[in-house]
Amino acid sequence: MAVFGVGFSGTVMAGQSAIDQQVDAFFAKGMDHCKNAMELSRTSRQVAAAEFDRYQSYIGKVEALKPELKNDRMVQRQIEQCEQVGHDIARMEALPMVDKSLAVCSDVKSLLRDDEVSRAKARFLEYSRQRDKALELTDTVLKVGSNASKIRRCDRLEEKIIAAEQRIHHSEIKADRLISTLRKSNDSCEVTRSLVSDKTPSEESLEAAEAMLSQARDYFRQSEQYPEAVRRAEDYPGYESSRKIRQYMLEYSRCDQDVAARLTEKREILAQQQSSDDMQVAEAITGQQQQQAEVTAAEDRPGTGAAPELVQMVYGIE
Image 1 (cartoon, rainbow, N blue to C red):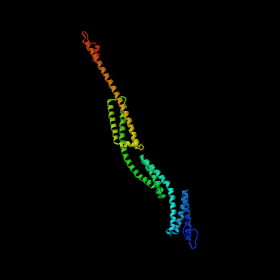
Image 2 (spheres, helix red, strand yellow; image 1 turned 60 degrees about the vertical axis):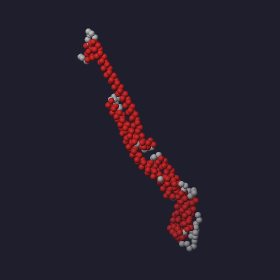
Image 3 (tube, helix red, strand yellow; image 1 turned 30 degrees about the horizontal axis):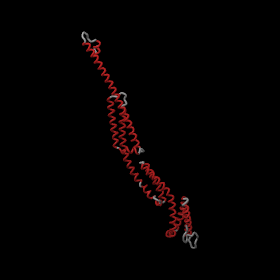
Image 4 (cartoon, rainbow, N blue to C red; image 1 turned 90 degrees about the vertical axis):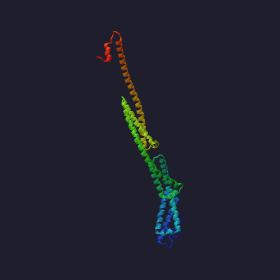
């Protein structure tokens, strides 16, 4: 990059003041570092950035010593060319940051699809951090490819996260209500299980157990009022509320089946006991009837009376 104009040739000219000579030297060195930065930007961004920093240092000194140089078109044209070199270096440094931020943005979208809003929010903060670092270096990265539109779409994910958080808040309220209902059904079922654990069931205990089981089933049927909460627990098992819902529903199903089987078994046992008792009573009545018939038959036979022992047995006479 050539040094321009009278007074910026790099040689001391007759009639120049000490300040002009200093400005000339600083400007020439600045242009050299600008040229180095431009050439090195294709091979080593870090070294090129260091060269550009040196250029800016010298140009800063030039402007401090002779502010009116800002009005010189030739000077400003070369400064603008060097500033473009700086933008190019910054853009090359910022582009990997943009790529990283867009990769994080992709993670945010995936997490939102899976309804993992807390993790999506954390990753969105990381996306914002990477995006801001890139734009602080230079906003010219937005002019590369479709970066501008991609970043705008990623920025809008913040609105989706806020909406998802509100939706989850309402979903958790419904989930808590469902959990409360399921807990009642499970508690009632466990009470029923204790009622059918007696080895010697009675009609009263079985009727109480059946009433309690009916109550447990009524509670469980109330869960049908929360189909969204049930479906959410199935589709998104990662939430603590989803885990509890699935656990309580499974526990109730097992308890209901167990209690129903025990009730059937206890009913059969009670029926067998009742049948046995009825049979014993019937046998006793039949035996008594047979003995009474024998007494009557003996009394009716001519010339004979019933044996005293038989009469005593039938009528309980001592």
